[in-house]
Length: 47
Image (cartoon, rainbow, N blue to C red; front, side, top):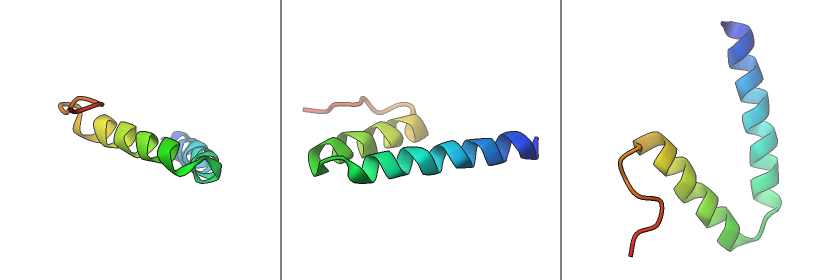
C-alpha cells in the first residue's frame, strides 16, 4: 500500500513540474480540473 502511495506522490510531483512550466491561463484550467476531481459535483466550466 505504501508503495502505491509513493508512486502517486512521484507522479504528482512530475505533473506539478509540468503545470508550473505552462502559461498562466493553462495553469488556471488545471487548477479548476483539480478542484473538480476533489469536489466531484461542480462542473468544470461555469458561466
